[in-house]
Image (cartoon, rainbow, N blue to C red; front, side, top):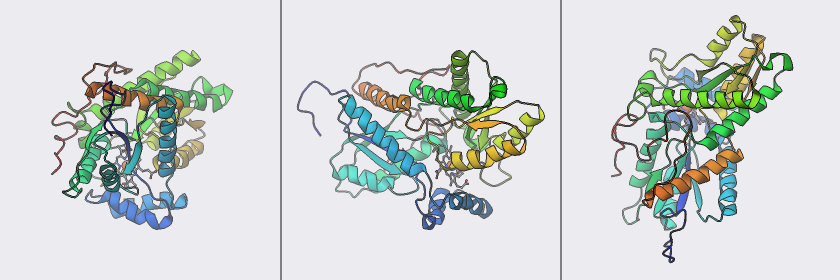
Length: 364
Ligand SMILES: CC1=C(CCC(=O)O)c2cc3nc(cc4[nH]c(cc5[nH]c(cc1n2)c(C)c5CCC(=O)O)c(CCC(=O)O)c4C)C(CCC(=O)O)=C3C
Ligand SMILES: [Fe+2]
């Protein structure tokens, strides 16, 4: 929508925000086709797929992720409106309806020309960044020839944005408050993210190794904020969940369940599990952590609570707006502040060549 007023609006040059997510099944009949979409060409053993299908069936064949994305969009729309910003929000997924291809076609039909995309993934790696670029390129390439393709940019990796950090810190503080009084101060902070193959981890970001380094950076910041708020230094560490793939291919370790065993053996008093690698409490959180890891802790007699992920925490919703305004200013040629906590500084706006395994392939 061209702006007749020469004074740029704070969201210019963008005329839409696109939430790009993973997608999840809505009904039992969706589970198998969803898993086929996720794992097409990825070499995941059949036994693993059957096992993961059971996780979904245990929850009635319905992932919480779509409802969580709807709630995030509603919260972002409300927040944008409250700040006098007029930017339509679209939603598309990699693996389930609404599919990104359809959303991109809809945006083109609506006359949208410049899109800023926010993924529900805050970190760098092929799986969490570049694969979403591949999905965007495929959706653009699928547009009919007579349609003007929108230009799509992607928000920087936002793991260290103050709003994302605050949301996670608040989650830890609430979980600590739920622990029994006599073990609270001795609780260990166990940050959890999705395991990925070590080769994918090694090639993440422009220089490699970004996936783990980003998580360690944000974990240290959250732990410091928790210490500042409580006056207690809780030891913290990073572990992994949801390992997949063939057994002979190495993935990031330790697995959260294995680490809980060790912590119990070491005599740890309590743990808080912090799903910092995830943006909402979707299936990897409600199954892998709440169902499996909390059961492990219970069996070990280890008091444990799970912290909420960012979800629709107001600080995270505000961070989405700030990231949009920041990037819009960059694209207008301004030099806005690019807030980032920790030691790594703000991530790049455009993935350099070779980022997360080779340059982004240009749309056909
Ligand atoms: C880094 C990362 C994130 C975080 C960033 C982001 O959010 O994007 C993430 C999120 C998610 N992963 C999810 C689900 C699944 N991931 C799978 C498989 C895989 N994930 C991988 C990595 C990641 N995954 C990888 C390297 C594989 C192996 C296959 C491959 O090499 O590509 C499989 C197949 C079965 C299995 O093998 O487990 C499923 C079902 C859901 C949906 C949850 C819901 O439904 O609520 C979400 C949000
Ligand atoms: Fe995954």
